Image 1 (cartoon, rainbow, N blue to C red):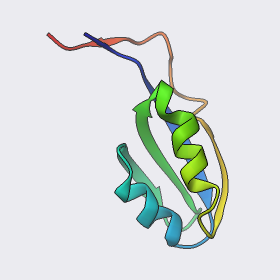
Image 2 (image 1 turned 180 degrees about the horizontal axis):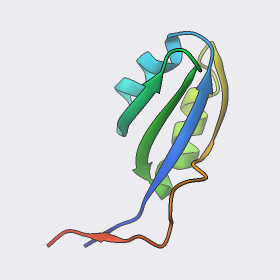
Image 3 (image 1 turned 120 degrees about the vertical axis):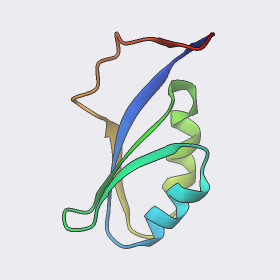
Image 4 (image 1 turned 30 degrees about the horizontal axis):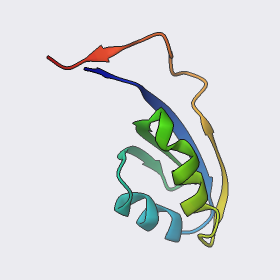
Length: 78
């Protein structure tokens, strides 16, 4: 079984976005309170669903793929 994971960055203003991210099915790895962004990993096919849920949250600015993430890395679970 291969996992098709991606790394995403969310830019926000306010704590409501972080509370929503913690309730979603993803791995929240880093939150910068000073620069107002969060880094998380999730399945690539879940991206539209997460964007849809975040766009109505107060303080949400932008979400996009991390420029430092290498898509060619594939992880498999045995």
